[in-house]
Each structure stands twice: as C-alpha cells, then as structure tokens.
Image 1 (cartoon, rainbow, N blue to C red):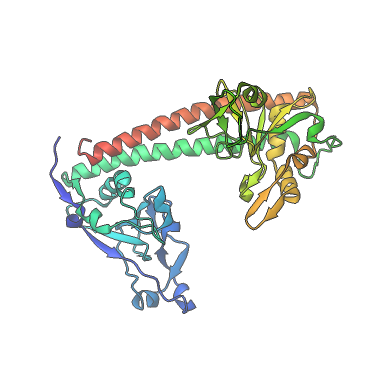
Image 2 (image 1 turned 180 degrees about the vertical axis):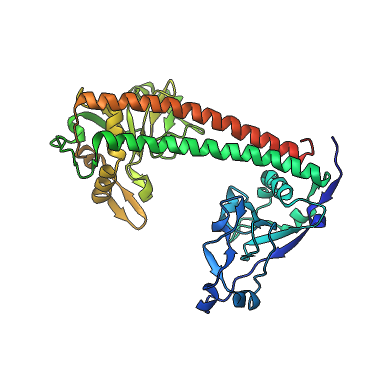
Length: 396
C-alpha cells in the first residue's frame, strides 16, 4: 500500500534543551527529570539521573516538554555507532545534547519515534566528527517519511513494539545464560580467590602447560615463501569469548604456521594494553580450520591430565586471575601489561579431575543452549531490522 509522505519538520515541532547553571546547586535538588544522553537507554523515559527544580527551568534554556514528546540525541560521542531515540512518558526537560520533537495531531509519537530509529543508518551517515559529534538537525527536519492515517500508524508502531519486545526478551535470555556459567563455577568450586574449598595450590600454570606468545606483525621473513593465514589479535580475544566477525589474515611461512597454529582447547590470553584487556581470554574450540595468533596474545596449551582446559580458562578469568594480573602487571598511565614470566607463575588451584570434568560437561550443555539462544536472537534482530525498513518505506 502506498501512503502519502511528509517532512518530519512539518509534522513535529523541534525543541532544544538547555543546562541550568551548575553554579547554583539548588537548581539540582528538584523532582523534574532532566534527560541527557546517558539516560537514553530505554524506549519510554519517566526518570533521569539528574533532577532539577522549576526555578532551574525558569532560569535557563531548559524547557518543559509534554508527555509523548519524541526525544533524540543530536550531539554526543555515542553517535559514532547508534542513534538514541526515546519517548517522554511524563513531562520532563532535556539538556542541549538532545532535541524534543512534539508531534502534531497528524502523527502518533510512537510511530514517529520508530520511523526515526529506522532511519538510523542514514542519520548516522550525516554525523560530523567534531569536539562533540553531531549531525545537522535541518536534514532530519527535511527528511520525508510515510504518513498513513493515525490508526495505521498505531498498527505499524504496535508491530514494531512487539518485535522489539521479543528482541529484548531474547537478549535477556542470553544474558541470563551467560550469568549461569558464573553461578555454576561458584557452586562447584566456591570462592577461588580465597580458595575457600582448600583445593591444592602448590603448582603454577607453567607446571601444567606450554605458554608461548605469537607471531609478530611486520617482522622480516628474509625472502621466504609465505601464504595468508587467519590470526587472532587482541581485538578478537574478548573476556570469555572470541569475536570472529572480522578475523584478519597475515602472511606467514609454513614453519611459522606450524609453530603458532592453534589447537582445540588452547587458551588465548591478551597481554594487556588498557587495564580491561589485562589477562583477558577465551578458549579456542577449533572455530577455524587453520589459525595462528599474534605476539600480543599468549597461547596456553594444557599438558597435564590433572587440568581440564575449560576449568583453567575459567580460573584464569575469575577474580583470582584478575587480582593476580593487576598485582603483577607492569603499569604506566592508563596502560597495564603482563609478560610470559608472570603468566607462567599464575597460581593454580587443582580440584579433583572428576569435578573439573563434570564442570566441563555442564559448560558444554550451557554452550549448546547459548548457541541456540544466539541463533534465535540473530533471527529476531534480522526480523526487527526488516520490519523497520519496510515501515520506513511505507510497506508494512
């Protein structure tokens, strides 16, 4: 069905925000929400981290916006990757990084918000990288959108609401499954940082494994024949998982590939950089047929039958591991790193092998459930994106 179109600026009044004087502390002791980009995390907003008084509104550029105003971030570093859109669930105010779009009688607020969010790729393409990333609001005002009758707008918005709700439920389900792994680990092994179960602790990681760093980018191969091979970088090795969406390749000799080639159940750990990357790691499950690792990523290959790789990986990632790495790391301003000597000296705990194997089996079951949940979420994300685009084209 073909609908008439209208420019957003013709069907909504754009209102800017403002910041009451920070010098007047009394302005920030009220009960009126003052919304900024950090509050734009839910679809309908009825509260904010900062609250102001009526005197603050009267004495600044901040204006009271009515309920059902569409809220939009127009200036923020967050615009590098997303366009936050929300709806005011009650009268509130906004700061200067937002615009409020007050709909006319011809447009439903929820429909307008959904259509603007559907236009996110286009709007983000307008963003200008300055001191504070922003986009020209004039372009948004001029953007034409389908404008069906109000009942049709409400029907379309309801379809998108339902798809979005399903997407959120799938995300919550996946998050709970991730938390379940931590619960299982604690249930079976207790507080490993304090070793409250008194597991044997007289061995270090190098007693039970082979630890090496990987291939160096930009090294000299002295004319030797090379070929492209996938390799793991610090960016791919995350905390508890591997990000394999954009795996890079590197030219390497057959001898190098043989030396650094990953095997199933190898543990990959980053040497550091930013403090959050310190000792960050995950288990390699043979996701790619042939893959090596760079020199800023350690490979730990378990050699002892007394140690299950999955247990070792979780132990290293636990609070026991994090506290050890922070104590041991070489730290400068904003940078922390560990070397192979420190990693080899990691203080191990050794619960019975049978208990470690039971943990591995339970984690395998959990991983299978996570895989199904991830596939379901991906399908829901694809459905939602398709519905958004159909709505933006006036085809829903």
